[in-house]
Length: 458
Image 1: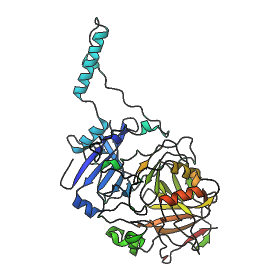
Image 2: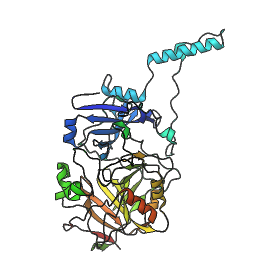
Image 3: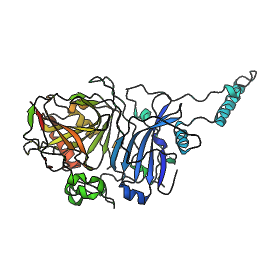
Image 4: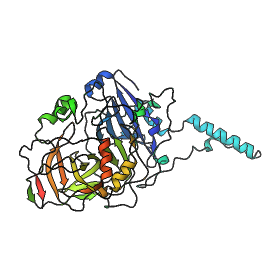
């Protein structure tokens, strides 16, 4: 579907079977150049869940990408009621493309073939009547919470011909995304045991860079990996130069908090008030994962149902990513690396748990698995079959610092609860070196404390 300002498309290669009668697919809204320049992104990707039996759909996730196909924002949508598909609407076109119900003509043709086959095998017997023909059986339903092989988790590849590498095989269809300015809260995830014998399935893999442009291999000339995206006319952020941290607040109006916010992160955690804090209750376990190169770091998306309880509030784990050196210092000292676990609660409030990483003799198994499955392209992603256990990135001791801050990257949104663990987790020197080669220093400079209270557990 197309109008003056945008074009709505669906990626047929992303359609996968979820539960019985339910399919999941990625679509995208491509903005016109004028609207894209004003919005700060060119494409909105949306993951929709389609109920093929009840003719309805729900938007699960939205991602906003710039002209270089780099993700600039990602929203998880929750607590939505299913939207019924109206007949003869663009939504019906999209639903039909995903669910692909057999038409009357298809059923009649199937019946005719069955009749001909019956006549050829047993000429004395009457032909099969058309109304006795059956449509093909539905695809097998993936067992709940059991990782499927790649061939079952993703649709078969339908790559474009070499003569036309600029566009992926997509089909225009109905609306797949709501307004980019609407932020909806996430649903409360059910509690689960600390560890499970089988990993939860990860969300379906989104379309890769082949959607709009030929990807650039790592060996090709490119901007510094410290930039959040490639070079183009739109404003971007990085960790150095004219788009570095001191300029973030002036690159886009919606990033103004980066310059004038009063609760910005990180801050030095020295001199906190020592009290008896409830330890964070981590509900992490074995999970499938999808690793994404976002330009400035590695971002790891995991399966559903994992969370952490902080001060009596449950926050659902969305993804985790890495910093070198650590984001927060203590008495001016930063650790070799750190991992940031990003969470949201049912009201959309955010919480970040930072775990320090220090050099040890033994490699960390999670980081080893991630490095073994690095995307081969800048801005690319990869979803391997083998799972990881995020608990291998958690310290044994529950001691931590607690304070209110912000996202450490644009848009620098405030009101973020930070829990910074005291005890570091080990990584090998080789793992540190590999990350340093891929991503130079990617932590934000210290921000003003502005009298904020920092609590420290005994």
